[in-house]
Length: 211
Image (cartoon, rainbow, N blue to C red; front, side):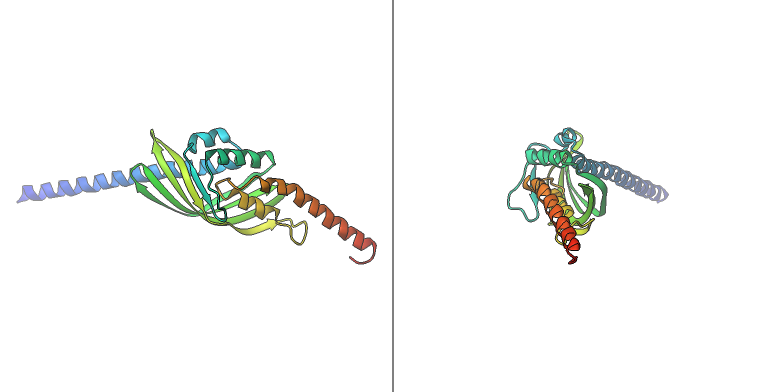
């Protein structure tokens, strides 16, 4: 009886030890997974197409809220380079809530995200949700797909006119996929021209005693 009790104690101790080891390994794996997730985001904003090409494979599929067209790796690389070339930069990046599901070498990451960017001296923040797919390939997590909700602009400053929305357009252009059409980039020049016209009109009105 005593021997049987000792065997049960030893077996229970082994179960606890193995469970603890598995939980620790899972946490470590999740830490690595989320580090890759953040690397992909920051690489896009930085125009680091080399890192993106390593972590976002050719078979990548991207769906962005408010867009009918699906995007692929080439679109992600192109729009990342365009954002960086046009002077866009990341100021802050947060993931207020993240949950991870594992299915063997596949992980699904559910998150809310909050980026703040700066374009042409104007800062803007937005928030939304994203579902990302990660696949472990040869020991390395890769990010072959994601879907983002349509973003919600939180703040855009400074405002250059009553309808200025430069920041929100750039946030929408990004929506993690980095896959808004390049037409949003071209709109920046038009927005600057509109701001100049608005400022000029205000100055003329003041001179005429109407502003």
